Amino acid sequence: MLGTETEISTDELARLNEGPRETDPYGGGVTQALAGDSKESKSAFYSLEDADIRVLQKEIDKKSLTYIKLAQEQGLIGTAEANYLTSYYQDTMTLYGKFYDILISALGHPQSCRRNDLEEGEIDDKNYSETYITPSNSMVLTYSNLIADPDLEESNVALTLPGMKSVVRAVEKIRKGGKYDQAYHEDMKKLDNQYPDGGEEYQQAQKKIMPAHVRLKDILRATISVPTYEMIDKVISKIMQKGNFEIVETRDKFHANRSAQDKNFYDNKKNYRDKKICFNKNGYYFEIQFKVQHLEKADKLSHPYYERLRKKLDEYSNEPQENIERRQKLRREITWLEWDIQSINRKGIDDYNAFILATAQKKDIRIKKEKIRQLRQQYADIKDERIRASLQKEIYQESQALNAAPVSKEAEKFIENNFMVRPYKAIDKQREFEDYSPAVQSFAMLNYFLVSERYRGSISGRLPENYNDKYQQAYFARKQAEQKQFEQECCQYEQFSKRKLFQHRQSQYRN
Image (cartoon, rainbow, N blue to C red; front, side, top):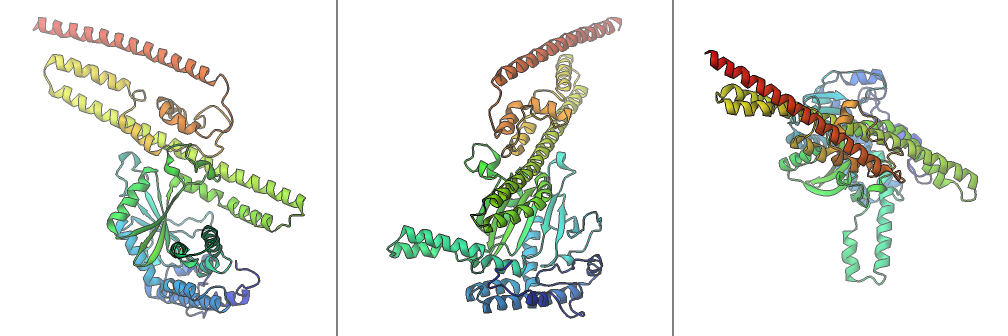
């Protein structure tokens, strides 16, 4: 919240969160959702007509402008900051409508529109009207037609519209002493050190430093969550094709998802993965956060720990240096919370990788079965016995390759594009993939050299001295077993072919 010396009083904030019963009966205010917090108010809100919702939102706009004015009068923000915020909050329904139109023009109209304000244990599967998508309400839209992959037909893309950032949070970010104000002064300090004598170069460099309020680019925001990593770029491409946007900033915590050797890889100690892109259209900024669904679930589970971590970090920074014992205790608690968050997000990445391997296996079997079907069709259409015999052998070999090597190129490519590098401090055990189902474990071993490097990429500590020897022994034993099985199958096939040929010649002799 705002600093104690120059903050807007609790009474003022409470007044801004209240309103006449006839215009604001659902608790809407500058710090509250339009539908309110109680079950009764939410039930009432989701039965309103569009005109009623617009009246309520207009009341919130008035309160937001009052809050901006109060912040300016008390010296928390200047004229430039106040004007910047006013441009967003003076008519939020119109602005948010334009933002929504931008997204819909790229993604199309959703298959469903559902509430995103359900309490724990509450179930509501109703498909709501898009009327309830407002600047002060949160809804989730789902799309199934954005996924062309037949092996992901049960998955969908989700667009979460959490509403606009509240004006209180916006002021907090850009106010004097706020996060972005501090960042601005730090950049200016670096510039002063770089050009102690000023001059033209100093002035040119100064123009490139963004003021605090321009750093606030997520007043308009949305989250798009997809089932696989490679779909992120596909959705971004869809958005870019449909709109005349300028990409202002990109923050990628997947770090290209290619190698644990990435220099930034170990900086992400939370094990958090997402990609944020800030766009600009007609002078307004909006931020879209791209997530992978398995990781998004883990992130939601870790959020309570993250909130506790933030409080502990604040306590630690405010604790006097001389209170050594208290600071050490806080540091231990901070470390434990960081480990909890790492573990939850690590499990999310494990679950995601298991999903990728299971989907790749499904893809591999589908492609091989389709090839077998096509070969059988050719076999049925061809009369030449020599070609039929060759096709029969190929059909047999393809049948034996189901759930076995070699893996189809399409399945390999799918793994290569989506399997994630294991996270920071991922494991302290050597048995790879042991938490996966036996079928997925087996498929993982078929793709060992494709996935193992990423799986082991961030193991802390050393592997056992005899790890390579053990692996080589297991590898050669498996290859010998495969060769022996293949030779047996070839013998069986030759016996089968000779028998079929003998029967065919007997049939010809009788005729």
